[in-house]
Image (cartoon, rainbow, N blue to C red; front, top):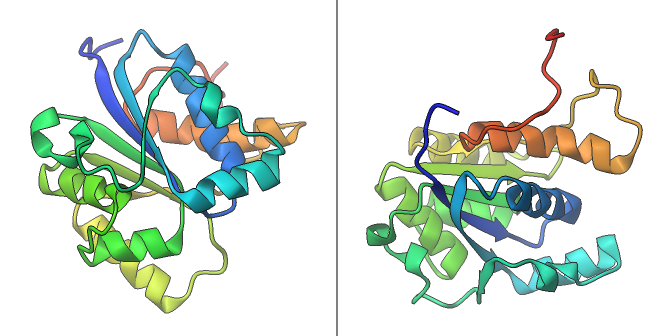
Length: 191
């Protein structure tokens, strides 16, 4: 591992479909605790409902990370002075993306994203909708031009995944790479 500094990571979970991506990311961050100093998590109310509907549980309550309410502007990552390195929005709803693209900081998720962008830190938005409208594409362009990374939840299949979790993990592995964390995962044409 080249960068020995542990990272401070914000994970935001919105109400877009794709709770499995958020669950797998949290699972992976647990395994990468030697590289991560702190994980702050904020979930929208819709995210909790979608998680329950899609995964038939409320296991997000069982993670040892610090959870913040969506309106808690006292969360450390609501300010650049807390020096969180990376924010991952997984899954990222198009409404959330639109608010970020236009600087509307009306909850902790959009405020934290605004902070990460203004501080020139890493914002990764794992968008899940399909198809994209021109409004979605324009918002992705704006966020990209502001320094964010748009990482569509588009799984790869060259690792020959056999379960839904393995398919979803192909996206999560890519997100972990983008966040600058070291992990063991399938690499194209590497023996």
